[in-house]
Image 1: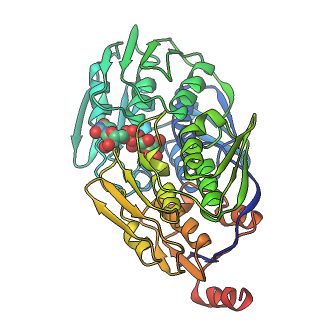
Image 2: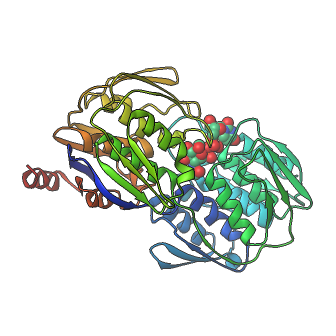
Image 3: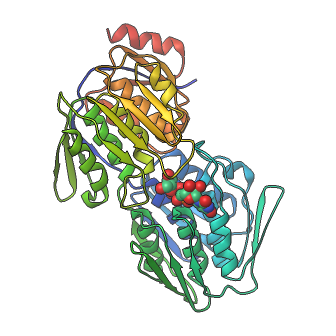
Length: 430
Ligand code: UD1
């Protein structure tokens, strides 16, 4: 069973190159099937979720040509089926993007209800509300979503709750609908804007992403394109927290600093030195860091996908902090694991009350989901002694070469496949 093993206590120092945004990539890969012409996608992260998405695309008949580790050429002209196999869907939640993409292109889609991270109930009622508003008939039978339309017609859609997935899915379903679609209260996340930019580069007419109203004028067809995915805000934020929690000095490179502002400003509040450059952000941790309060919110608020990493950072800061999770209901499951390392956190409803401790002690912990898994690795890197993190399949869903990049920053971490290798690591690193 693979796990990360590490010996903590070393401040991370150096530069780390951030890859393409996983969550943008997942939308873009699905949207790529909406034309019959070639689509070249660059800066694609080589992570488990995007690779599963590529397998699913190949499975329904799209041609998928990997040009190099971060570049892929897709062609959707050979797609044979509008139903996606359950095997892929169970592995990634974002497989729901097949619904919007297939419905938008073929006016018909058949996709099992998605799996993905275990962070609370994650309904797709808003996606379905949007498809129905565009004229699709949508039903769920035996865990499969069937969406079908004779014609898709532009509509005025108000999202009761800000949803990244629903916004992207409705955009895809609406780009080739007749007439104009207006989405009110859409998600404004950078990856929503990136998927819209990608669709526009294929000839779509989407305006207003990143604002409170998106307007989509339907076009007859989409054409081929070449597109480079934006940098991953959450991967960058994770390394920024790694700098803070290990009291290191890390520059995240190839980023859009504006997308990181919520994270940068909180780290500055903790007492870290944060400097922004054109395409990089440097975070210098301080020996004394202080408490603060944080509430996760849709962009431009503090991202829920950074909540575990900042909580771990606050758990080693002076004073009492409160982190409130307002997006997902079950996102503090890692707190029990952190307690095994000496973290002092009490969860009350959707808030974590964090009393800073002086140090963590290495322990054997298990990743409950993707971001919490990464946060536990950060905790291990800051802890005294050895830490092992199990269930790292979750972490590999969203972080490319996580251990390699951390080693490049000076971390003493290795991916091991069994206890013998773990023992070897302990003997080597005393
Ligand atoms: C996406 C991201 C995920 C991130 C989340 C919030 C991808 C692949 N995943 O997930 O990493 O944590 O945004 O930034 O991009 N909701 C409903 N009904 C719906 C849809 C959502 O009630 O039909 C609720 C959800 O339960 C949640 C909130 O809306 O409470 C936000 O969810 P949403 O933005 O849709 O998250 P995802 O798109 O699933």
